[in-house]
Length: 205
Length: 242
Image 1 (cartoon, helix red, strand yellow):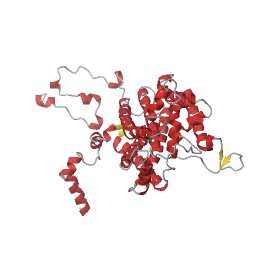
Image 2 (cartoon, helix red, strand yellow; image 1 turned 135 degrees about the vertical axis):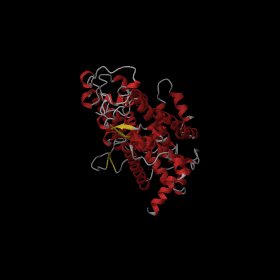
Image 3 (cartoon, each protein chain N blue to C red; image 1 turned 135 degrees about the horizontal axis):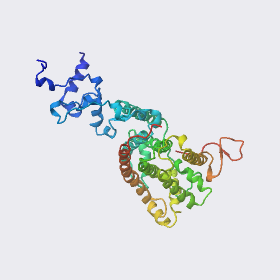
Image 4 (cartoon, rainbow over the protein chains, first blue to last red; image 1 turned 90 degrees about the vertical axis):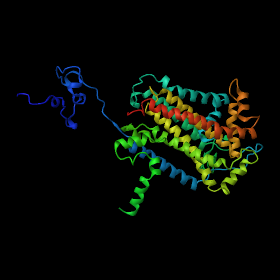
């Protein structure tokens, strides 16, 4: 009478407190279902260190989507206010016979138009934009120095070159916006003590 | 239970409501996952995102806002299309009518114009953000290339729309812009003729820019946008953290 348990009771796996379940507990199946015998238990940490990545994720709803909806809402309000209070420019009817005093391209092309003042149109109007676009597309295939470094401090060359390029483009665009007047001549806006000063900006969005 | 609560319950338990929304309001992790997965618009997102990606200061929502502006421009643009004929004799009058006689016409045109400028600006900013985070590095090289194509398409969308009011600034800005195409080596004349549909900016140019602006370029942009968003997830989600 040493063994009082019936065979059915022996197969029952004792439930483990869910918060204390180990990897072994998860794999535990009734003895009868296993075609092998348990020979020994080896502590998990002693042999294999399971590479378990820390869970640094959050649910998309609400954490990401709420921010996106908020940003879209703010943008809607901003656009509505801008549309209510600032009218889009509309000049006189197009006339191919009357050249306007100031003919400027849209602001994102003003850097190129500024280059036109210094270089031949083939260079400023065709080659530079082609090189810029193709060059931009090729950046990931050129910058192969260390594909694993992401911080700006680890890839100073790329960051400095890109920043210089951006500053150059911004400078050309700003000169085109503020310092170009009738006939695309160099003017200084708002400052009457300059000989080539003008009353206002020669610029429309 | 108050009257409003009973109405609310009644609506939520109705057959119509439950046919629209399969899950109750997402409160626990499982239903929140379903809320994203089962929605055709939201399933663009993964169910879970990495924690640094939801910080506003990491992305500044620049890419998302560029896409939102694309949607705003599509909606306002479709409304404007009802009142605009791409004809050299009628276009300018149509714009004047939109501004003075069409209901919310002036507001719609204003939003379309400012939204277009903002979209170009935001796409530039998005590109700079991506560069400074090194997010073009493997495995995201191809998505950067798609992004450059989208930048080009955004600028072209804005540029073709510039001609449509058919006023002086439009006419002369497009004249300057298309003249540059005439200086391309080897294929200068064909490019110029193809863009203008003639020797100078005229009726053919207006029609070409109109079709490019309202149909061709938005379609191409939509395809590249789909690839762009798809590749974000296929390339392992958003880059970083730094």
